Image 1 (cartoon, protein in one colour):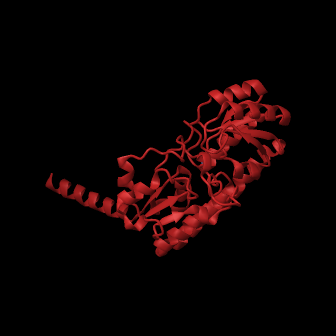
Image 2 (cartoon, helix red, strand yellow):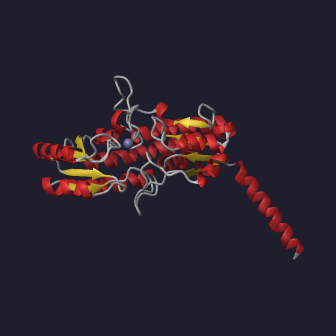
Image 3 (cartoon, helix red, strand yellow):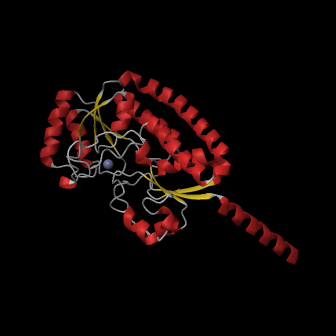
Length: 302
Ligand SMILES: [Zn+2]
């Protein structure tokens, strides 16, 4: 009995030592967690703070997030002020110098990707605009997913130089798979190039540019501002003129206004998931997220 106990204790120690060797990574959104798993494989433990079915602009802070951040070696953020409403106090209160803004364990992934809607004039958060520094939903384009993977690989290599070859190999596999998948997605959406759509929030500029769709308007008058009667009236007129086929919305918005707009214009209301884990099924990783979204979109536009 005693021997069994000692053996169990040894096993436990060995397991925890092994787990301690993994890099502890926290990402603000689930999409970065998915890409980090692709690149980091079994050398990383990744948890994301925002769930895929939550609006990443407005995440309710929880004590469990502090614990996650306290133990993190690396924090991956979207940047461009996407997390400004909830992340800074969590970082402060975690008292983890490794992941403080500007520390080596703070990785702002907006630095190495293509950003759309960059402001040309002075930056303003006037009237509640939550996209003051450019569009922060940049992960919804496979080319940017690859750029995100490259930045993550560089960081992992810097933190664990002995595993460099392993991370490089995994990044190459990820790039290849992403390239192949994107060819499939492009072919599936090819018949709908040039189609006019409306989206609830301005989350899809990178996505629609990749696949040749046009967004002609938004249900929100400004990003982060709920629909108003006068804006809705103008949008309905615009949609009739522009022959808009579909209204795209995220699962976390109220469907009442977009559904009534759809009813009055003949457009279809379609739910697309902006993040991994946003749907009950079929959004388990970045690849299945795109499979599901493109499938839903094709069905709506047919
Ligand atoms: Zn947004």
